[in-house]
Amino acid sequence: MKKIIFMTLALFICAAAGAQDEALKVQRVFNEVAAKAKPAVVALKVVREESETFIEPEFFFGYVVPRERTYRYNTQGAGSGFIIDSEGHILTNYHVVEGATRIRVSLLDAGGREKTYMAAVAGGDPALDLAVLKIKSQDKFPYLELDYSDKVKVGDFALAVGYPFGFRQTVTSGIISALNAGMKVEGRKYEKLIQTDAAINQGNSGGPLLNLQGRVIGVNAAIFSPSGTFAGMGFAIPAAEVKRVLADLVAGREVKRGWLGVSIVALDSVMAARLGLNIASGGLVNAVVKGSPAYEAGILRGDVITECDGEPVEAEDDLFYKTYTRRPGDVTELTRFSKGLKKKEKITLAERPAENAAVVYTAGRTKRADMDSRKSAYTWEGLDMRFEEGGAVVDRISADSRLFGYLRRGDVIKAVNRAEISSPAGLPSVFGAANLSEGVLFDIERNGEGRYISVQVK
Image 1 (cartoon, one colour):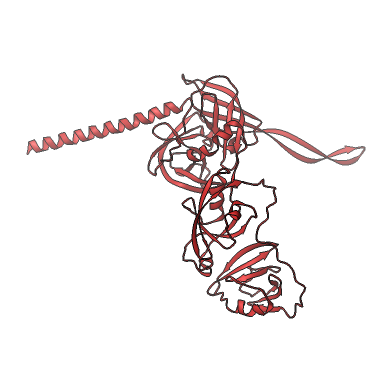
Image 2 (image 1 turned 90 degrees about the vertical axis):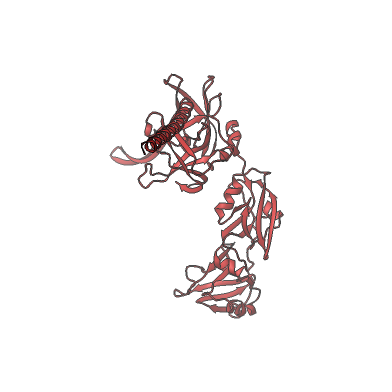
């Protein structure tokens, strides 16, 4: 019996010693990663020039004369970044340095002493919230490598390094909590983010998220927090997304964006049923730009796009992001349903037009016909309508109509449940076949632009 107890204790001690050895190995890895990051992660102090204009009274011979005065002043911000090559290029968030007039960089040398340099913005991409700075020095700098392998998995260890709240360099650890997260922060939309529970706070923006090999898997960009401080949810832009634009940012080139040339609305159950499709989600093509890649590929208004490069499309933002982050000339693969048939095709993206460039959609404006409104008048579900070439014009909507809030006065209803309105005589049959309780898909024109509206009310 004593022998059995002795052997059990010996096994327990060996297991405990083994577990302790493994824990020490992990600790040493953390130590090594932190030491590697220490000289390459920098603190950024950003100065911006702001101005405000006031109307101030000025007394002149007893009269009050209002005068406009503009006051200029500086504001300061802080963030983090990390050096990505020996020449002193720094990667950080665009929002950290946006509008900066002066940028001061502080880093730690091999002996732990702080050194300060000035830096300038080499290039920026507000869409991905990334910017590259160049240190104004001929020195050679230690740097971190980005891991473009895209092999990050939920549950992996991760370390975040930065300068939160203006403190000295801080290292926090955690795991990868989720992948492909999306969120909006102050009007900026982020997609495909890495979510981590490694503590990230104000001032950490632009710092690296590292794996246990000491390679950068993401750029810390945002947190979700009801209090404004860390609440267990931090987000980083993946290194694979950084790779798309990094060369352009370092060279100071404008980032060219891919463009498909369609506008879509999220498909709902009513739309799917009325289009005869047995699918749960997708993007209903609302308009196609003439001459765009989508137009040349034969994509039609009323088609439903379900996938882009094998990933689901459920809303406008999904398709926009998947093409916007690609380059002109890149090939994207779309899966769509057109006239009930499923199609899969590869389309070469073009360069996205400038924001102020005019684009012409295939959903053209309705032509007005000269017709006796009394002969073409029709009333249905509280709508007073009259036929004009191309559809039924809504003249009035009663306040108790079930369509109140969906349709507006002046809307032109061009089709109902895919049945086109081509003549006054067709109004009773088209509208008579529609049942709002079962759901109705309206194809309308509003302010000269086509759109789909689905309505299901009891």
